[in-house]
Amino acid sequence: FVAKSPTPAQKSNPSMALDISSKPRKRLTALWTRKRLTALWTRKRLTALWPRKRLTAFWRLGSSVAALTCGLLLLYQSAKATSGEVAISITASGKTKTFSRNELLSHKQLTTLKIENDPAYDGRKTNYQAVPVAVLFETVKFRSDDTLLFKSLDGFSAPISAVRLLNTNETASVAYLAIEPAGQLWPKLKSGKTAGPFYLVWKNPSKSKISTEEWPFQLRGFEVKPSFEAQFPLTMPDSRLESSSNIVRGYKAFQRTCVACHQLNGQGASQLGPDLNLPLSPTEYLQKGIIERLVRDPQKLRLWPAAKMPALGVDSISDDDLLNVVEYLEHMSKRKPKTR
Image (cartoon, rainbow, N blue to C red; front, side, top):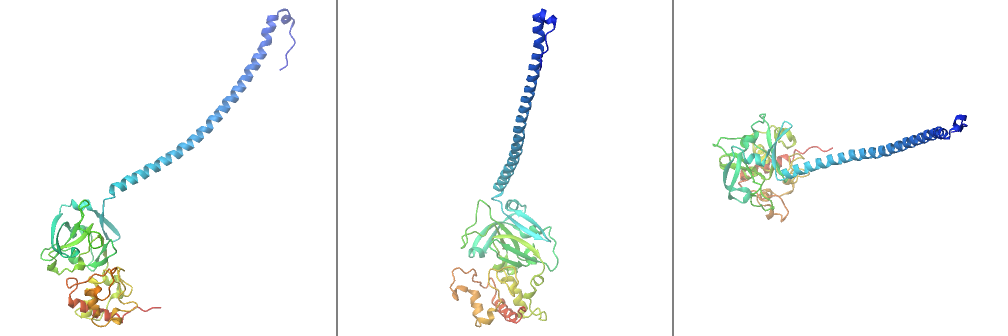
């Protein structure tokens, strides 16, 4: 800023000169102040803007963490709420339906079933809260050749007759599903576990000659499958045999009793025990009569405390059926799959 020379009037009146000369300084001061304030305001705005962005980012991050925490908390509460809940499943046509323990214990057909000779508990008398198995399959559609496969928690799995299992006519044996209450656990088995949470038991088992192998415990579900022959064709004997032949009868007994643990020719629902035809059939390396003794009491032939195979008495497989199974195994030893 360049000051102008005072006019004659200003010289004669110093106060006027003072007033006039002060205006540029005020304007200058005001201008500088405005610029400084503008700069300060801009800096403050920028300074305020950065924390806002940072706080926005932190807020968004905090929101995500909070949402995740809430989600995990809900999952935890849900898991905690259902941790004591167990269920049994029914699978058919690719769809699975489950029945919880509480749901079954409040079912309108729940009853107390008395068992006179419980195979899971060494023939003791037991009482169970149970529902007819048929109620689990009320909405399931079956083909005429379908079979039912039960599955246990320990890997025990085998086909079971759908006709026998779903029968509700008390002129024959009727299947029930026993349910172990969460607060009233059943006695422990030799394994240290109970037969629960679900156990397949029978009313009047003698009427249909129900074997002990048809009392699976520690059940986790049932699955509707095609016929056994369709699932495992390599287990089939020669199709030219009569249905009344000992070999075919042995094949049927093999399905009821043996496939719960064993495969044959690499096919079967379970692998708890060895294959009964590959690489060799037991009829090829055991003397005649040894298989029958082995089935009746394995520990008398081979001392093996960790062995899983139980002794199978006549209530599990009759003497005639056992002989037929041996004949079936001899027949199948000549029907091994071709290896490449």
